[in-house]
Length: 100
Image 1 (cartoon, rainbow, N blue to C red):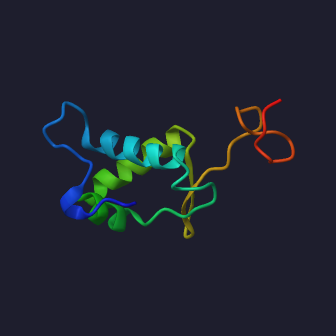
Image 2: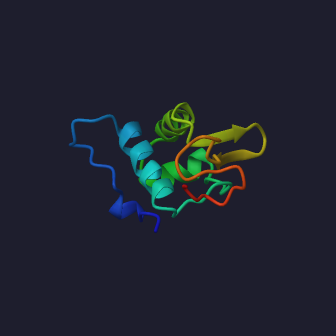
């Protein structure tokens, strides 16, 4: 469920940075399982078009997601949803995601 350009979740009138709104929306998509670990995010220019923002805003949102540990960027490969780290809730040594 990616937003259409005319239905962007970004509210320019909201008292919040646009890149932060964008990062928060992508983080919600990751939390809901819409974007699974290992999934490749669109490129910055494609994200910018999808959200109706400047490509530098999309770049800043991607950096924010990296800072949060939600995505990893591999040069010349792209940006991918990060796999949960060991010790985080819902992640055990087998990768089954069960809590005991």
